[in-house]
Image 1 (cartoon, one colour):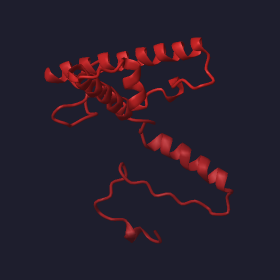
Image 2 (cartoon, helix red, strand yellow):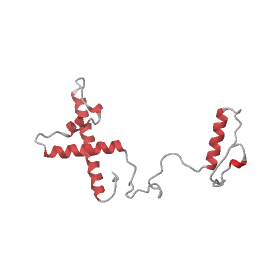
Image 3 (cartoon, helix red, strand yellow):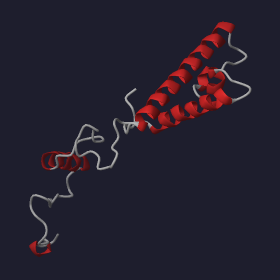
Image 4 (cartoon, helix red, strand yellow):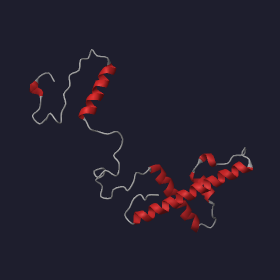
Length: 152
């Protein structure tokens, strides 16, 4: 702004801040000045709003808790695979389902693994797939009751 006449009538001092900064100052001092100024004048917080905030969501069906989309995709893929396995003629174990879905790639046994290492990897993968399946069942059951996602 070069003059007072450029001030618009709809601007109010509580909503607009105009600052003059000498450009001869070092950049880091200007950054610090603006950081202090914004902290004093703008009450914003870092990060996303918590779901516990009453004004965090205006959705018709708000989320019950924060959700990781990638984890939810994995859980539902495991659920679908296990349900399809129940009606299949050639059934797979949970660890085979996990390997086919690419869960825990480090749990895939290699030719260099000892028998004990391969067995512990299989057990870990089976437990992981089982956990994802149980969580997906809880989420699906709670969604039927209008709560998404369920607290697992």
